[in-house]
Image 1 (cartoon, rainbow, N blue to C red):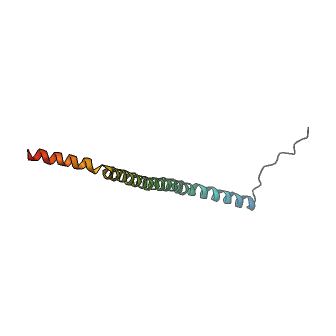
Image 2: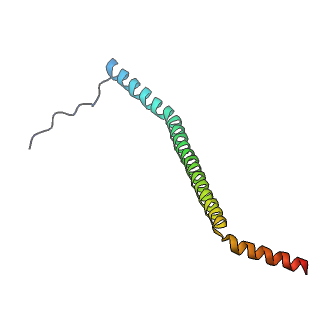
Image 3: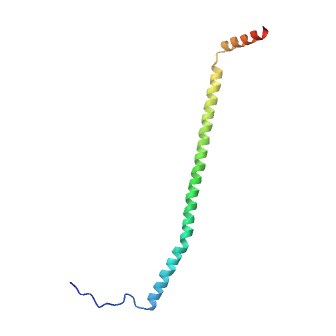
Length: 101
């Protein structure tokens, strides 16, 4: 087995080391300071996406409802127009006959 070198301190107190320490501390502080803003931004983005999906769904449903209404109206009018006029005439004649009695 290889022998370990004589134990030396991991860092020497030099001007470079204190600058690195200051830099790392500043970056950590910046990250900690940015965290609430990033979290709030994520929340707002998710809320915005959910609300836009809700608005889109509402618009789509309104279009579908309008189409169903038009189809029902068309079917109703078609049914009214397809009633035989002779049977309508007979029914009307019976109504008038009852009123005369």
